[in-house]
Amino acid sequence: MTMGHDDLQAVTAGLVCAVVGFTSSFAVVLAGLRAVGATQAQAASGLLVLCLTMGLGCIVFSLRTRMPVTMAWSTPGAALLATTGATAGGFAGAVGAFAVCGVLLALCGAVPWLEKLVERIPAALASAMLAGILLTICAKPFVDLPRAPWQIGCVLLAWLVTTAFARRWAVLAALAAALVVMGVDGAFSRTGVTTLAPHLEFVTPHLDATAMVAIALPLFLVTMTSQNLPGVAVLASFGYRLGLRKPLLYTGAAGVAGSVAGAHAINLAAISAALAAGPEAHPDRDRRWIAGVACGVVYVALAPASAAVVAVALVAPQGLLAAVAAVALFGTFAAAAASALEPVATREAAAVTLVVAGSGVTLGGVGSAFWSVLAGLLVLGVSAVARRRATPKQ
Image (cartoon, rainbow, N blue to C red; front, top):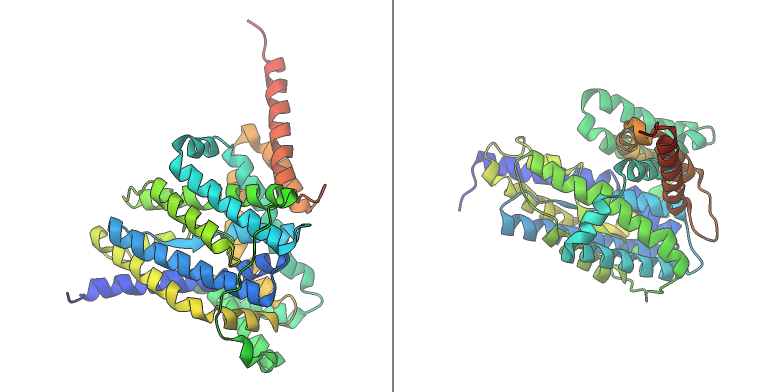
């Protein structure tokens, strides 16, 4: 079967979707894996598995459903890992938490009432937790700017200028600026050639109670509420009724299987999904599935480059790729903060959730993400009691 001009347009849209999705957030993924204790080899292995599983998911679901289904790694989940840091169980404990998160995702697909239970979590608090997690990451380049003004300044300037003229490519421009800075700094000459071959690094999961509370539950929550549920909504906005059951079963199973090789979580794409599902991908809505397949093929093709990406990232000047990660998350932070603080009835509880999550506080080895939700629910409950007491009795 020959491909017409419009079909080639869909292929191009899928290519753009994958390239933008990968380059805009791989730095966040690497930062998250390294923060919870992954070695260079383990981080490269995790990146490899994430690319393979989300690429295969794009291909299989797009072909079977004839919809432009795109998948992605959990960028908010990676941001959570970056702010949580290592637990007492080390990376093995984190891997055990990744596996439990996968089980929870699959259970939501297998048991419908669990999905409904997640949907009952106040959306404002979930958004506030995400915004608080992202706040620390988004603020980092400005904290580092006095120490490395020209390096980080180049990244921020490239992002800002490109945002004015071609917003879609702004993060890619920031990454390009970072690569130029690395070239000037001589970082590439410090990369060991022997480290660039792709390979899997297996880790035996350790079920650590602290990691379950600090990583597994918050990772599941942000992946469901900020990725999977919005991902279905984005597809629905373009007229595609996908449903969550089968995608959750796949992403959950992939999460369990991939966890032993260092992968944290995959999910339905949310923000980048519009690149493949919108009219820019193909004028015929029934042919946009081609963009989903193309996106998956590109992700699979990028997988072998994982070790090279990690090796280059490790020799980057300190704070440089963190700046790229920050600009990649500015939009997500803004959307999460706006969603959290918009409803007046829950605004105070959401503000407390955001502040606690952004504080980075750790109690009993459990990070701020978990405590922020508890604090928000506590304030929400107290506010409900106060409103009832203030309501005159009939």
